[in-house]
Image (tube, rainbow, N blue to C red; front, side):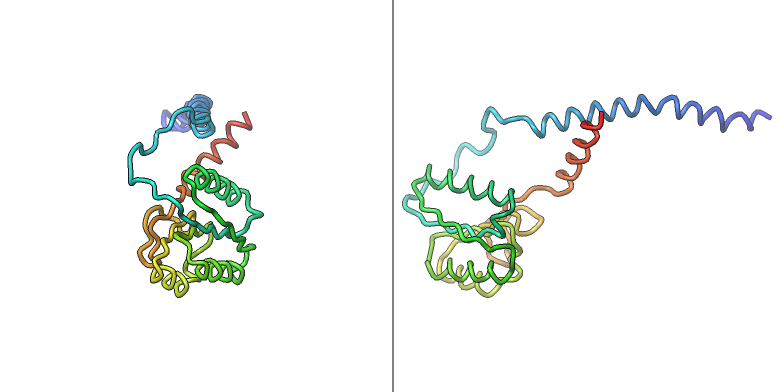
Length: 180
């Protein structure tokens, strides 16, 4: 007879504790969202590095300038280039592999000091990227592959990217917080 009452008892206990778990999760989600959306008031990045080289020309090849993230990166590059005294040119890949490759070939022909791959997969451009490196053009990237850091197989010096799992987690927490 006692066994019959155990299941309803545990179920009642579980249901009674659920609001407490929800409150704890909501508090954790709120804290994570506040941290992720807070404005930075102090630089917490590197404070030393190589000496700035003068008079460089960089070409940013955007995957598609209609993409807000790509626009933000281009704006940041523009501000950085201006502060460094560098010349920045932006070529719009227009959201198509054909136009991205055409932009890459156009950029290589200009013989810049560096090319930034802006949000498109370098796998489609192995041959022209190899040609760029052979000409002494430094390749960097933003969101070219999922992992940050150098991309050896494409000779990309560094790929700047974010952790898509972390972005998804914060987006889900934001939705929870907004739903109250």
